[in-house]
Length: 457
Length: 105
Image 1 (cartoon, rainbow over the protein chains, first blue to last red):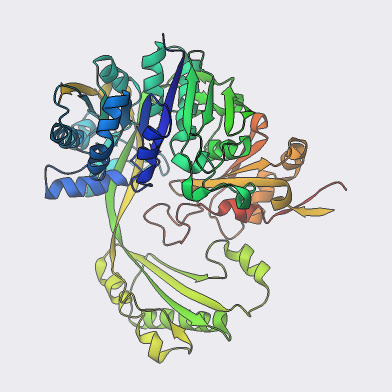
Image 2 (cartoon, helix red, strand yellow):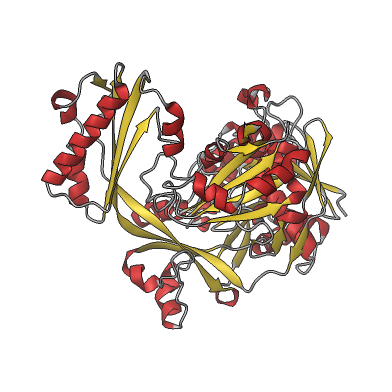
């Protein structure tokens, strides 16, 4: 049995640093490369792409990335788990297979595909059978927005990935699988963990949570002592080195920048945290109040003691629906009286929107340089009005496009017919943007059947 | 004497829908009880008055010397709906660190 397993984080979101996966598979020994691509609204963007072209709907930059690293993966026998498949994991797998064949890797590589998470075509049947898919935040039934739903995906857990690995897959490409499942699955597979070993399921889930945001666990976006975190230009992404008993260490490759510290790992543990005693995944309910952290060496944090409870009988469903339109316009005002000028411009703009009888669900003003990040708390702290410059940033939101479109034409005129010393309109008129909103819900686990296919390239 | 939380704690924040979470962590283990005693859910709700529309929940993680706060209705609808620069609640962390608490000399 494997004594220690190394899982390296390569991407923390779709759009993360393209160099990270390459460096993770070349910078030192690893067994798995784990890449998380899917944020809450990513699925709807992918659904839109798929509706235009049935061969799309996945993280497109995954393909050139795999093209670059496949020979290294094959040579070093590094496996991959990635939810890059989005709403079209089969098409993603086909594109990777084609790239592999182009590299002469025929018969040397098996690709696993995990699907069955996509519920879009089943929604009406599910609603008819009494699954209300109530919004977890508002309690409203999905019926309210059914005709505007753009995508609906259940969060699958680690087990379908484990099945793909058992069938010999080297690269596992999934649809909407939990971020943590991508890390837990290789651990289950390597160590032969059982589904009812709740502490082990929780340990692997915590490992996944720590590395799922990439460098956020290795010195990126870390507040503690941030000025002295070394060489972020060359930041090493985190690696889990786990043992069969569920304890593990977080580390990074030698000769990389960043820092692995108890303080930094703690920051990542509390990131996007709800009730820490009940971190619910399809695989278990992890208790974050049982985690013990210890600095085990330079850039090495030991994690142990994790306790878990049985998984629930529900899966979370991520539904995206069309909500309306928004636009944001900005102008920059210079000293003297920068803030007062921006405030005057905001008043004038709002008066004109009112006079035009435009109806908005919300108008939101921020004075960037004064209060955009900390609101009233910052205004109270700034005290003086003598700031060197202020960016006026006004956003509007409406169910219809027309008022939002009209708003976008009211920013530029202020340059010549509003307060003085204004600049920063080089980008031109803002564009109305479609809002795709997120509807979280739960569904009975038994309703969702994951599908696993493994094919040789 | 009064000290800003910035001097005795660090923090990271994120989002879940229209809720921002702030994890507040003692820089030195011995200061954790000060956070537990003084940085209550009610105190945090007052700190963010006018900036959030919902309630504040607090959870304790003594093992990590951390408190986790959920600030409901903090993000103007959250995610894609929000018109805020900080639509994902990333800097509520440092906004909380502006709070002052009483620290023994």
